[in-house]
Length: 86
Image (cartoon, rainbow, N blue to C red; front, top):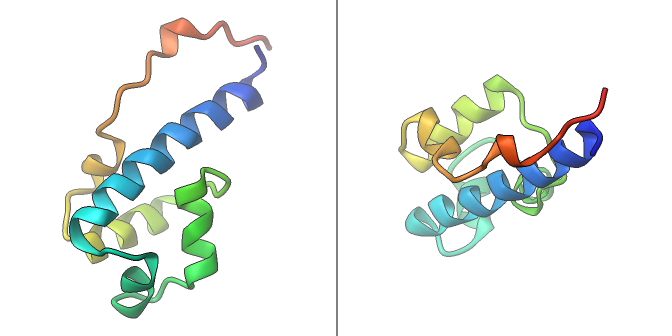
């Protein structure tokens, strides 16, 4: 499996966790945009697993969701399961 495929799978897992964390604080994505500088359509890309957030974006997400940045990565992902081709 190439690294892009593994990244896509990882981003889907990140997205599912992000949505779970967000719904603990806000019912809808619009709650995030109302309480932060996030554009709703840009933020939705992260929850769909098609956006690749920067460290700065991760920090902004944590601030608006009132969590530690590490909580955005608190999900199971067994990297050993994937054989990444070069």
